[in-house]
Amino acid sequence: MQPMQPDHSGPPAIDLQGVTKRFTTPSGGIYTALRNLDLQVAPGEFCAIVGPTGCGKSTTLTLVSGLERPSLGSVKVHGTDVTGITPGVAFMFQTDAVLPWKSVLDNVALGPRFRGTSKAEANTNARDWLRRVGLSGFEDRFPHQLSGGMRKRVALAQSLINEPKILLMDEPFSALDVQTRAIMSNELLQLWDLTRPAVVFVTHDLEEAIALADKVVVLTAGPGGTVKATFDIDLPRPRVVQEIRFEQRFVDLYHQIWEALRSEVDIAYAQTTAAQAKEAS
Amino acid sequence: MTVATSLTASGDTLEVSANERAYRAKSRRRKVIVLLTQVAVLVVILGGWQLYVGNDSRKIILYGVPSGIASRLHTWVVDGTAIGSLADQIKVTLEEALIGFLIGTALGIVSGIALGRIRFLADVFSPYIKVLNSIPRIVLGSVFILAFGLGIESKVLLVIVLVFFGVFFNAFQGVREVDRNLIANATILGGSRWQVTRQVVLPSAFTWIIASLHVSFGFALIGAIVGEFLGGAQGLGVLIKNAQGTFDANGVWAAMVIMGVVALLAEWFITRLEHRLLRWRPPQLSGPDL
Image (tube, rainbow over all chains, first blue to last red; front, side):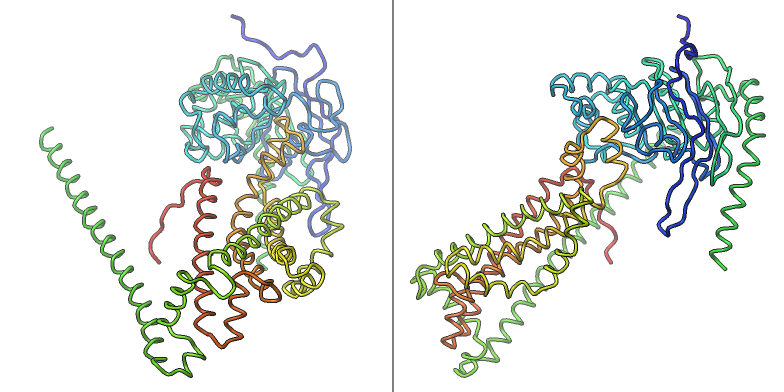
């Protein structure tokens, strides 16, 4: 089977043009999270966004999902302006966002139930997805009875059951230990292959970004983060996340992207230390 | 080699279980000691009281005496009180407290969640609620007696007023404290505002609401008793008022004992409800004794 390719022919799945996002801070000041950001993601494309802390990576996701509106610029999804919660979008959060008072099955069935599917049908569908993420037999558990990795699988099934055209992921595996993280990354790629949504994957971890993505976008240090550079990752798929990092092409790409990222990380670090020094004095 | 290892391993297991046995025996012993001390404290207090008052009839009138309280309770149970059987008095007071408690709690939850979820309502009503909360609401009892008479209505209203605010503030705060991520997640999964309120906000706020119910039921009993005290024909509050009027300290204490038993039963019931509703929560691990 020929692996599917990102579809660049039609309108992009995600299209951000000249986006600026400002927040009012509690003290009344203005904080510019993003400044004049352009980003396009094709249908079926896996795009990773890397950048130092506070560069507006997560803000980008909230704009695409419709949780926030841009201050300036346009946010389009499949050619349509985003005005509310974008339909066909799923969001995986950094922290656990599964409902702790619902069983695993009810959590996964939540999306279809919200959309008016009958309980029986939603449960059948949810069982299907639980099997796909390897959680058969855990339907009746509460989230607190599962390990961190298993909770992430629940969240993944909960997102994918809606068969989203776009999957937004905000450092979803950052709370996991290194081994679990690699396993989850692999499973993410396999699951992604089933429905091939466009993915925006935000991470601090450059290795993770290269191993997963078709395209890595480096943002500049905040405040007012914007795109510094975009790199196409031409590593062949299917990939094995744990092993791909030993390949020469991976190492070359890593060097190349790290060159772009390093100065931004230095700037961000200098800013935080300066801010702390100011607070201390 | 293998044998030696397994021997050591089983030796280790034995050692651990011996330790565990010692630990269990210790914690059992500790429980017994705690219980005995508790009984001793009670005996010292009641015995001291009994000895101090003795047969001095002046002191009995002023302070009451444990043996007198016990015989008063016995008379009430066997022969009934001056205003009817004891069971009827308890029933009247409990009825007032329960009806008021249920209505007050329901109103508190609904308005707390409405104001917590709808910013406009919160902005409009918050000054009124602050004012209402700052006045001593027990005084409203007199107003209700004047307006609604000596029947059950005035007491139920007083209970509602006392219960409402505690539940309301906790529900309101509970809604404010809901994890933003949970709301965002449910919204993106396709939940409408009502669905999110029903399935995310309400269960999350319940931790707070339940906590307020423990205190609120105490307030409900106080409201019912004070209401009867201010004006009524039946109930434990009337018993207390009559006892006070006839210099019968034993009667006051006896009514108080009954109230205590009722409150403990209610507390047990609310704790059961709490466990049932919050069974999704991870069990609290016992920490080191401090």
